[in-house]
Amino acid sequence: MERLKNALLFERLGDEPRYNSYVRRAANEAAALAWVTPYPLLVFPALFEEKADLALAQAVRQEDVLERSRELLFV
View 1 (tube, helix red, strand yellow):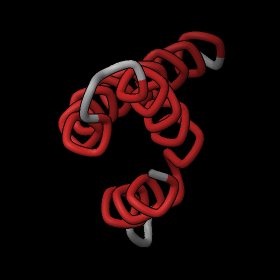
View 2 (tube, helix red, strand yellow):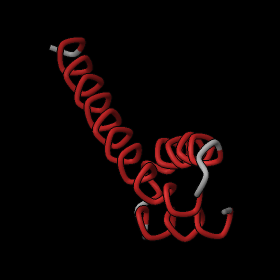
View 3 (cartoon, one colour):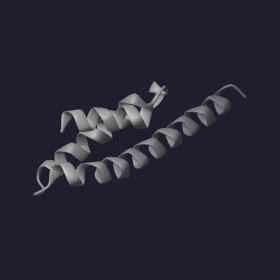
View 4 (tube, helix red, strand yellow):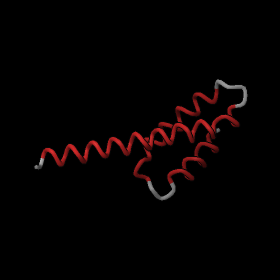
């Protein structure tokens, strides 16, 4: 499972470590959920993709809020 998780993380992040913590957290959550299923190695990739998409969307929203907050503070 760990090798699969690392391979999916590498594929998803590539050369963009900017969202590393978000995607790693999503991978860990997906792995935990997958382990309680009868076929964790089959379930994990789909769970990972779903959770990684949500995590990245959240990260982008947080960056947007931070940027808008900075603009308001310095205007």
